[in-house]
Length: 361
Image 1 (cartoon, rainbow, N blue to C red):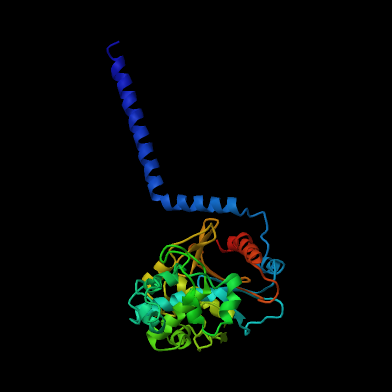
Image 2 (tube, rainbow, N blue to C red; image 1 turned 30 degrees about the vertical axis):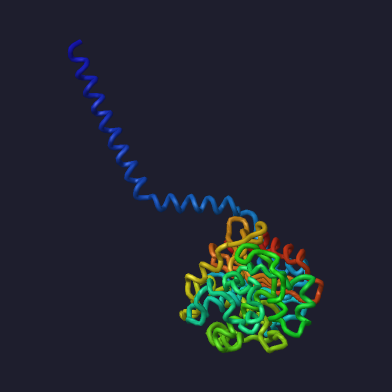
């Protein structure tokens, strides 16, 4: 009986050593194959999302489905800096420019950042009084002199809107600048967002006066020429100032270039166009009225599923959409005189989210 415990102890020691060796081998295998396991998990998730036995509809088919949504006349898609889709509808072709309407407001945001980078403007806190001396010499106590460039960039000037039902009266006036500045303060500058093309027109005039160039000449020198973009049309006010935030005509392929430059943090073809700090500042949501209406410096921001979308939006269905997680840019133009409405623009946006974005993941 005295030898039994020693025998059991020996057996237990042998078993313990065997188990320890097995554990060490198993642990070693787990450690060395961690990346492989992670890859396999990713592969399995991909199979769950897109089962191999379910055929995918060709992208061309999806693109042509979009035509049924409304008066779309072009859609271009860039992925990883390469154009992967380019479709035109309703007689439009690659050499034809389209009025991008208020999507040009986002271009004005880029130009403002360039003007600050180049030292033409002090920054977003600079007030507008010095740029309109002829007006403020007559209206010293209006309270409008303290409106800042940042207020213009975020539609928080507080001035009554010149858009919507007031747009016609504004553009038929003899002096767009005075008309916009004469609007009553119906909101608190720096606080209340009031969408108004009159506000962005003031910003375009600020750029012209700060740089001693027309807004187009400034844009050509610092933005359009480096991106090899030609403006095919841009309305002017009665005094000859280029319209800030509307009625600019561009090729859809040039819209892609602007989106790609934003995606690449202000660089295009290895040339610095605007500072990365400005890019980041301009896309931060500062105001918002819903899930598709967050607003930074004249750029909108929303979510398409799990993907962030930074976008320029023009009346009637004009879009530059930037999807950073997917390294993709989508440009869409629509016929401006074919009944394109805000509801159509929202349907188009949903179609892009549901039919196009899944292909870019």
